[in-house]
Image (cartoon, rainbow, N blue to C red; front, side):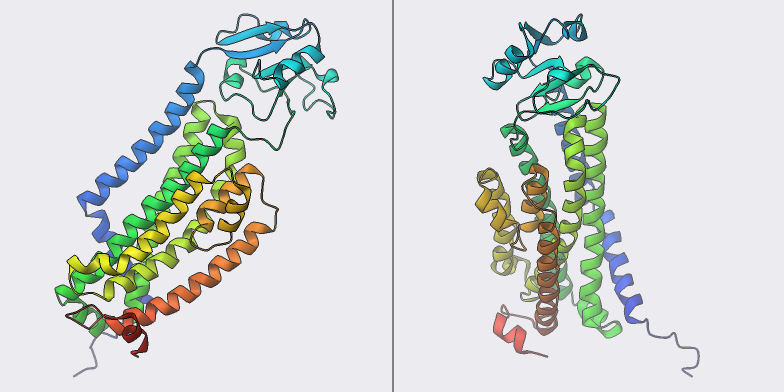
Length: 375
């Protein structure tokens, strides 16, 4: 009689079935779709505003010599200062009188050969090229930095703010959603039907994978918005320095999110009512918020940022920022990633044990020791 009974799904199939269910339920949620659309619109508006602000600001102050004055002749949006010599133009950059100087390439101090034979002049700046200068010149001549280690404070702040907000919003939003989903399944007894058909660990893995796919999709779309927006608005210099850090941010975010997702699912399994979720998820929410506030207030503190880049919960924000600023050696993100992956594996094992030990327990909040001690 059981010859034609459907075979039980394998563990991999069970995981994917749960992941599909999670993805489908989120995409059918109007709140999720609307909040995601708002996030994308805000990101696009921020990038466009940055380009508009750079292009519509009062004239960019530049110094020229008699040999380079023709390069800015008839160009609107510049406040041009005529310097007697290349040395005088450089002095104006060093004392902050102008933002950039256009001087003959063969008179750039301590510079290698010109980067392009098509230009006989070089743009010399202190530590960063004004974002609106290249579009105004309609060309990209060689650039020489007097202080390559320096970074514009506002640019540094906004890059830190961007990484921090994206990680905070994505991790807290999806983390809270995972915890609420677990509690809802306990309240409605749906979980009893689910675990009668699939292993408990497969249920947890499916939830984590499904939400990770959605979160990573958001990150990739946001990265695409940043790349396209910066390109269209002429902020190519920012984009050039941001490409590598964006890739590293995506990698760090992937493992950081998996770590938090497993812990949020476990925290949700420890309670039986939606009203009690805060008692178990608040510590995790603090761990998500802490990197955001630290990177905002200490983004210019090398010691704090270095420590943060090796702490698993803050590495997804701190390490990409240090890479953008050129403060991290080539091997540092690799070491930090290994530490994050190791912590991620440990969190999954602990979270799975708590999840398994708490999922079928109703009533009062399950104590952590009790959840860990149950098989």
